[in-house]
Image 1: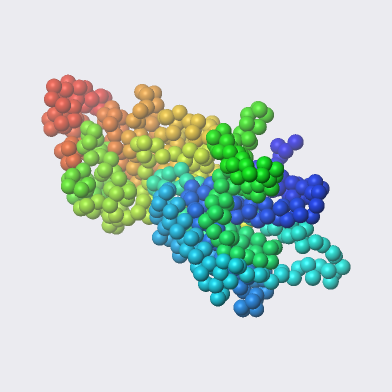
Image 2: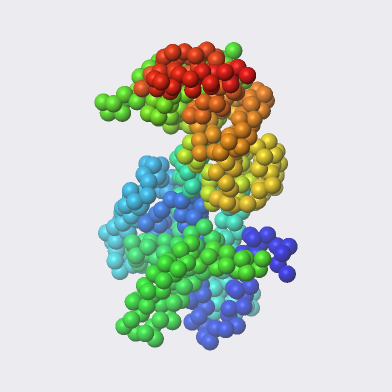
Length: 320
Length: 266
């Protein structure tokens, strides 16, 4: 039935179908909000698929870029009078620039050294946002101007709830992000990235400028995280420094690895689990975090390559 | 005409000398081998020539340009590629993709085109795929092109590395023990493959343990022992050099060395 479709088209189609079908099962409009959060987290995790899954580098500070994107949308309209959509782009550009500047020295480090360096970078951004209260409102956060899309739609006679609107906006951006990540995977540049995942030395002997390609992956994934930060800030109409926090960085990385680090579909699956499961697990009350941790451990023990790649392999094996 | 010239190349690790000062040159389109017992410094020499180590002293001249200490990816762009003794195949890719990865220099880096899936990306993919199939036919791996690289046999992995290195379109190919760990049949196949590569005009520099392979296909042999070069010349000459017989095969192994020399002549 699906034999004629390339794996990339299959991934995009799966995401699209789930996106369209899911609202039919939503008991209330609150679930649109959860859905939007899943898509936004999925977007940031998809960026990490490029860095972690393709290029084999780790980052414990990617929420820092989400912070840049979020505060660009909070500060831009207020202080510079810029339209919010332009602020998303500016935030992404600033994140890319930061990633390029920071990436060049720290991506020379390997494995746990790189992990600690990116961790430091994330904390730096968090501290800057937290401490510059005159600008960012400090730990109390600040409100974000509305995108203005809802009003615009109302002028055209379309009435839509904010949560539903954000569901479709973030869903659309996630699809675009997945499309780009899948293109990259099967492209010459993607092959170069995946080469250094397996052996940096071998990659360099076939002419790949290892440092340059690593920075490229870092910059691209930073843009994903930044746009995700912008989206969540505009959806919530409010932003706190936590968007750039260490815990959020860990969350994003966990989503990526849980779903299967090199799988674009896996990123969204991981985001779904880590975003939706805590809501489901509230029935366990005090044991909520405990059960979440347990589930994560079990997945990593029994499905080491992450959910999607492991299950896809089993399914293929049964099919043949 | 020389393609590679190595002059007084040496390296110390801390106070320990790994290679003292080795000089030799490789002719365009020829096969040249470096042999020697374990610990002689062959691999260190290789790593210096291919830019993985920065030498303590001496020079590496490629096509008349001093390339000493240049990074491997720059050397690759100048026409030098290599394989590894301890196999560095990209395990998460298919056999075909491994060879396609070797086309990086011809493909160039066009990030926007690749991210957006523009026609240029598809065209470069297609070109690389065609060339990769051609190289896989050359090394005899065409049938397993779409298999995972990790499923290949040891000999298959060795040939895959050679195909990947050839994809960079080198004028000088460095092969680090291409026959190590291979059985007699596989060694014979690799032997024949190396000769075929040299016939296409690619100069081959070989580090090898397998005396038989070296003697049969090399035009010129450099012998190393205990961090220095002890002999150099055509295979028959080297095999009969008393210093080589003593150093490489140990005293009392004279008959063995003669046997090797005779085989090389035959």
